[in-house]
Length: 449
Image 1 (cartoon, rainbow, N blue to C red):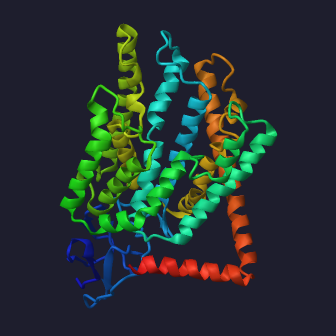
Image 2 (image 1 turned 90 degrees about the vertical axis):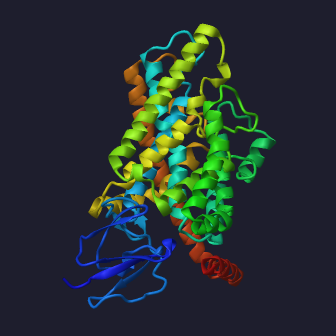
Image 3 (image 1 turned 60 degrees about the vertical axis):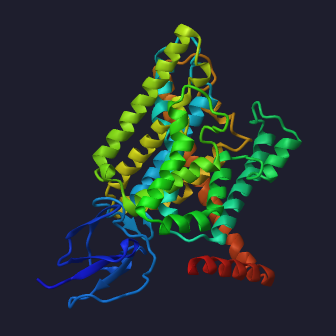
C-alpha cells in the first residue's frame, strides 16, 4: 500500500511515524493521534509531510491547534478551538457559580456546629465536587498556552475586560444597593479603578501575573526534557501542595491556592501533560474515576476532620484543609476531570455551539464576582432565608447556575461587540493606529522567538 504521509515529532528529537491510510492510529506522548490527510489541521509541534510518493519537509506549519491533540478520538476541532475543552471550561464556570452561591449565600453549615441536616450535608457534598473548578480552569489555560506565544495585545485586552467589568458593574451595584456588607468608601472606589493591583478579582490577578511570566515559563517548559520538567514540577508540587496536604499543621507560607505561585504549578502540570502525557490518564474512564474518587475523599476527609473536632475540640484550623485549591485531592480531581473531557469527541453543530459559548465564560465570573454584586445576587435565588430543605437547596442551586451563567454569557457577548465597534471607530484615528501597529510589532517579536 502506498505511503499517505509521515509525522515528525520535533519535541523528541525528530521521531518519525509513517502511515498508509486515513484512520491509522499513532501513539503520541500526550494521547492517541488519528491520522488524516489535511496538513493544515495539525498542530505546530509537528512538521507534516503529505505526499503519495513519500516524505516531504514542510518546515514550520500553520500553528493551528491540532484537532486530535491530547486524547483518543478527540476529533472535535472547529477552527482553532477544541470543543471538548471549551465544554469543560463551561462546566468549570458553572461549578464556580455553585461555589459562590453556596459559600456566599450562607448555605454551607458551619463545620463546628453539632447538627447538620440533609441540606447541610448535600451542600458540602456539592462543594466537594465543585471545588476543582478553579484548578480546572487554569489547567485548561496551561494546556493551551504552553504551546502559544505571549501576546501583548492579549494581555491588554484581558486587562481592559477586567477594568470595564470592575468599574461598570461596581458603579451599578452601588447605585442599585446590592453591595451587601461591602462598604462604599475610598477603598471600594480604588478597587474598582485598579482591579488587578487591588485584587478585585483574585483569580484574574493571579492569572494575569502568570500570563506576564509566559515568555519565561512557556519557553522553559517547551524546551526542557521530560526528566527536567518532571523533576522541577515534582519539587514545586512538593513545596506548594504535598507538604500542606499531609502535615497536621498550618504552614505560614501557605496561601491555600489563592496566589500566582500555585497557578504556576498548575500551568506547568498542564504543560507536562501536553508535552509528555501521563499514561494513567490516557483513558478517559480513568480520569473520571480519579475525579469522582478524589471528590468523595474530599467530602469524607472534611467530615472526618469535623468529627475529630466535635469529639476532641482540636484541629479547628484544619477543618477545610481538603477543600483548599492547593491540596493534593482537589489538584488530582481537577487533573482527572480534565483527562475525562480531553477524551470526549464532540463534532458538528454541537461543537460549533460550544465553541461559540466557551470564549465568553470569563464574563460569567467577572459579572457575578464584581464587588457591587458579589454578596447580593444569591438572595435572588432564595439564599439567606433561614433553614432550607434538600429540595429547595438543589432547586435554588440549579436556578442560580442557569440564570447567572446565561446572563454572564449574554453580557460578555455584548461587551465583546462593543469592544469591536469601539476598535473600528478608533482605527480612524492616526494615533490609535500607530499604537495598534506598535502592539502588533511586539506580538510578532515574541512569536518570532
